[in-house]
Length: 133
Image (cartoon, rainbow, N blue to C red; front, top):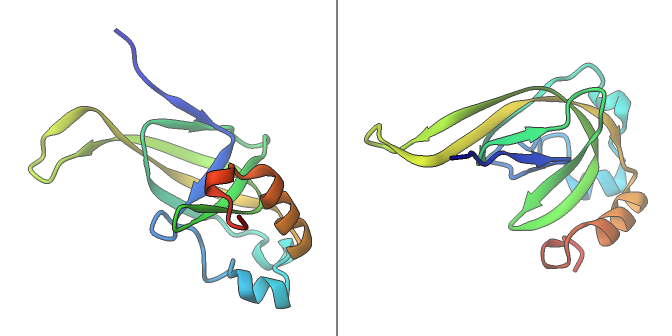
């Protein structure tokens, strides 16, 4: 008997999972880039990541990605501050073995400038999930 725990070096979030679109908006970023100073001291939350996941923890960097309709857009790097794995219960309160969700908090380590963001995403996102392809 065993268990499945995924180890991630990338925090890839949809808007619903907590990606902070009010700060990280691509169109605005291309005109007036978001900087580390803009998010300094802020702690962000994420939720409902499917599966039991362990992210590298502070001081190790984790890539920060916005999942936009299944396409990955890299924004920079974050430091995980906390993480929690919980059973994913069905509406009726029952549990399907192996159904878990992960949530937590993070701070921003750095934000990619728009040109580097474009280049990094092109080179690092999987081809079938690349925002620019």
